[in-house]
Amino acid sequence: MSSNGQVRADLQKFPNQFPLPVDPRFPAHAPASGGKIGPVALRRLPHIVEPGISKPAISKSEVAKVGLSDICLSYRTQSGERLLALDNINLQVRAGEFVCIVGPSGCGKSTLLHLIAGLHQQTSGQILIDGKPVQGPGTDRILIFQEHGLFPWLTVGQNVEFGMKMKGVPKAERQEKTRYYLKLVHLAKFEKSYIHQLSGGMRQRVAIARALATEPDVLLMDEPFAALDAQTRDLLHDELERIWSETGRTIIFVTHNVREAIRLGNRVVLLTFRPGRVKSEFPVELPRPRQLEDPTVARAAREILDELRDEINRSLEAEYNEGVKPHVKTSIEAGSEEEEDIERSAPASTQGSIEASVEGNTEGSIGENIQI
Image 1 (tube, rainbow, N blue to C red):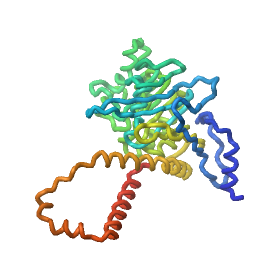
Image 2 (image 1 turned 90 degrees about the horizontal axis):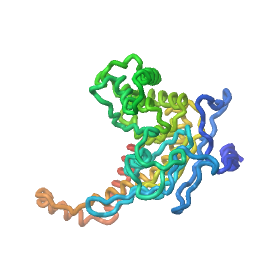
Image 3 (image 1 turned 30 degrees about the vertical axis):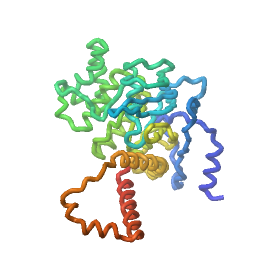
Image 4 (image 1 turned 30 degrees about the horizontal axis):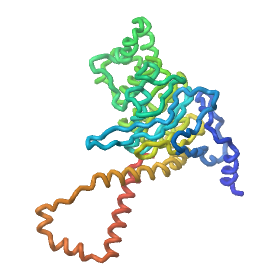
């Protein structure tokens, strides 16, 4: 039997359950010197189930930090139709776990974070934090948006202090925690600076420090690094991983970048196109620290991307069908009757070649725009 076949046979011996989160403070052993890197330690766990039947991610005796049970969300569009955005979402997140959510645009990734944060109410189903239902926003959950939402008229220190001030934390304690969390994100020297004096990456670190200063149990991050350049993003990946390992926070991270999800997460959850459902879950068992350029990270991302591509194609097809409108002939087209006659008289084989060429070019463009 080949080495790849042997690895696949060994993987089948593993129990069909989610592994415990990898603790970066106790990194896994690296391959022996001179040894070859084997197949990626990534296992696909199908998750599409019948309504009302959830696939447990944790043992029955363990209470999930974040629990989603049969979550559905629908709303009425401007045309009066009812649109189902999320359908039968079942997801369990352990305390201290780093879970990344990926999916095509419009599948409900950000909406799901808003539901967990208590900013919106689901149509049906239940969201639990430590076994208690979510009734609205709370300081135990903090949502970090792609737009960092910092106050430009306040200094960096005052921005970090703001959430604690709203909670009624005494001034001396606020100042002590502000200094601590600014030091944690390497911005201690910029406490008196204003937001416009900082780079994009530094502003995002201020937003992370402000969120951590309120000491939430769950950190919800909605594509926080999407607008940053590659170099700054890589630095913040390292910072976020370090902060996660030092604080033990539970993080649910939404991204369009599959390789970023592999780089950061203990588990990657793939959502389907609208209505958003959990299609698959991928426990990531690669040793830390990881880098986006690692071959194992790239191969793991490719495995997820193969499934994600199907959902992206579905979303593009749906958007195209919804956007088709009756064609109105322009004055230029009206004066080009001869060219239209030539098109109508073209042989079927020629039309087929044109369609195949257009389809091929479209697929190529789609592939180039997918982030891996």
